[in-house]
Length: 244
Image (cartoon, rainbow, N blue to C red; front, side, top):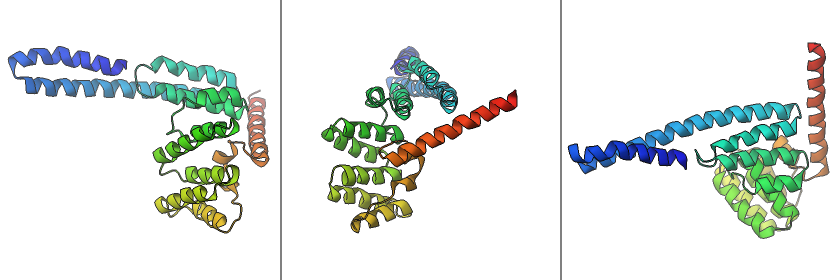
C-alpha cells in the first residue's frame, strides 16, 4: 500500500535524526504520528476522488449509458494501491451495474471481489452463489454479510428468504429473523417477516422496495425494475425534448 509505505519513509527520515539529538522514544512517537498523518491525508484525498468518479458513473447509469458508467468506474482502479479496499469498492459498483443489466455471468465475476459492507452488491453475490449451486459459499458469505451489516434490517430478511424459500431451512431462517428483531426491535418489516414465518405464511419481500426488486429473484421484481428503468428513460426523453 503506497500511502503506508510513503508514510513510513517520511516518518523514518524525520525520526532518525531525533534518535541522536533527543531520544529513541520521542523519535518513535514522531515516526508513528507522521505515518498516521500521511496515511490519513492520502486516504482522504483518494476517497474524494473516488466519490467524484462514482458520482459521474451514477449519472451515466441514470441515463442508462451502462458501458460508459463501467468505463468511468474502472478509472478508480488507478487508486487501488493508495488506499485499502478501493478495488473491492469499484468491483462492487461494476458488478451491480452488470447485474441490473441481467448480465449475471459477468456480474458474478466482479461481485466475488466485492466489499461485504456494500450490502446491496453482496446480496447480489449471494444470489449468484445460489444460481451457481454454490451453497457452501452462500452460507459462508451470508454469515459475513450479516456480521458486517448488523444495523441493516434488510440483510436479516434477505437471509431468511434465501434459507426459508430457496434452501427449505426454516430453522435457520427463523434464527436470522430473531437475531434481526432483537438488534433492531423497531423495524416493522422484520417483525412482520418473523410473524409470517412462525405462522407458515409467505412474507411479501416487496415491502423492502428497490433493494429487493433489483435482485430480480422473482418475476414480479423483474417487472417492477423494468418499469422503473422505462420511466427513467421516458423522463430523460422529456428533458431532452424541453431542451430542444
